[in-house]
Image (cartoon, rainbow, N blue to C red; front, side, top):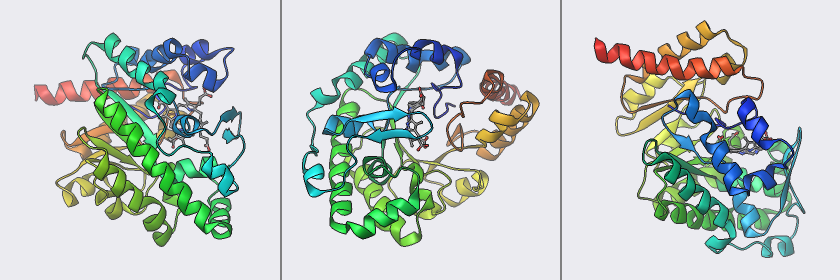
Length: 321
Ligand code: 1CP
């Protein structure tokens, strides 16, 4: 059991650490990022996800970003021309993301094997939306792809090469598992999903191997394509039936699918009930308890603590039965 954005703005310890630093200044400061990565350990999570962002890789490729409040990561300049694209390095030397490699080493040293360490990358489609400055505005992304078809497909290609290199480096450095985030691909139609998301998932999972690989598509409607992507673990959203997915795909593990909205707006009792229902549907194995999306910034700390405690209590109660 762990959560996306487990080191996020909802956690007062994270906010205290981050105070006074811009997001990228903070995440490129290895010691600050070690502390942020370890913040959720005090709640009793079963894995630590490193603190950086899906835009860390395009920054290493040569595209600077700034985190704008309310708007998310914004590129300078957004990719518009072949000259902009040519300025990006498809295979950045690992020294260009040395801070992430150091972060992994430092977090592993601190944990001494007590908990596994997850790394991640954005999938080409979702990262490309940030590189062109459209983010989750899928209509604007479609418009860009229609206006610049060659540029769009070359950008996806270049990002997929960079993603494989980045993940392979972190695997060789000792990461225990990785998650590929294609957050906004769930809004695509079936043929867009096939061309812009699925084909790159297949390539990345085929080429960056050796540790368990998790695929996340926010509320992904194409469960069968997700299950054929080559990932070992599929993240489910609120639209999915966890028990049915486990039955239909017996060779895969599933992650999910407590609704983050319950953590944001529910009582601790409602959180506990949702966790227990999810663990029952998860059947006790081939299941990572998780949320359908990240922990929202307005989530009460007590609800995150309850999410973790309820899972442990349920686990202990089941073992005693
Ligand atoms: O300090 C802050 O302002 C906090 C917000 C924040 C955080 C905690 C951003 C800006 N990035 C991060 C770190 C981060 N991002 C992690 C670290 C590990 C963890 O604690 O989970 C991870 C895994 C991500 C991944 C990420 N970044 C995704 C994929 C997951 C998802 O949310 O679907 C996406 C889409 C991003 C882009 C991004 N970075 C930050 C924000 C606010 C956004 C989203 C903007 C938007 O909604 O368009």
